[in-house]
Image (cartoon, rainbow, N blue to C red; front, side, top):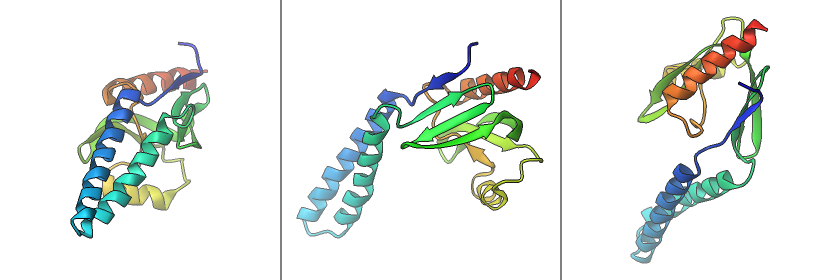
Length: 154
């Protein structure tokens, strides 16, 4: 497999979530018209969701770039990088009802100890990818474990 590979969030899924948020914004607006304060909270909360999903649809705002060195994770135009050597393994799992790729850091990875402890307490894992990028969580975890093993040999 030729690296780097860039994977993008599913446009279909993003559009679906955008439509759900828009539906709740309209419902909130209707509640505001009937004098309910809950309507304002609904419009604000789901209005933020509308903005997030619109930005996610913009070119290069969100992706997973897999290289020989590791993973670049970009979400809403903000990037972070994880070296292969910092990851013990990738697993498919769930946080709440959301299926995602979970990651366990190596014992040698000493950055973000407090954040990793909080994440482990709240979600049962040290980290997770924000999307499955058009794959199932199982497929992506398997692909990442394979690429990690291949890139670590070199």
